[in-house]
Image (tube, rainbow, N blue to C red):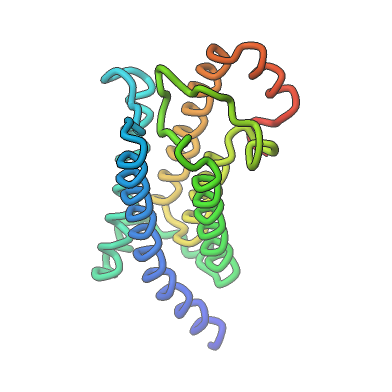
Length: 208
């Protein structure tokens, strides 16, 4: 009985936590983009030409991010929404839910740390006239795509924190779009820094 009560308490805590978490993510990126653009007076978001593969990749990821945020907010006030998410009861246990919350949080904190380490060099998408310099220090000494790794970890954590068909679909689409974006950005860097990037890729892994 106690185990069931504990699991129920964690489920309700996670319901609140996910709503707060994704609201914090939205707030963080909104503030970062606004303040950085104000400081350096240049564009930070590059979607590419409308309907090109990079544009579709960005839009797909953005739509699912908003969908995740909205679902987490709505289910906080309308718990009955869970009936439509395709919950997976066999995965709704305390260790799984706690692991999901921890992984979700760790991934986001890592993302924030990497953003601050990049300072004003951060861009979303492929800047057609940048970057001016290849970043190979800091977190980039251990992974060629540390932000994507962190976001991927958060996406896995989200599925574990709310095991359902909905979060599984979000996980698959999220990881796929991250992979496609990685391939596109690495191709761009290889074209901009042919010899330097080739040397970099032989010493640093794509992920971990």
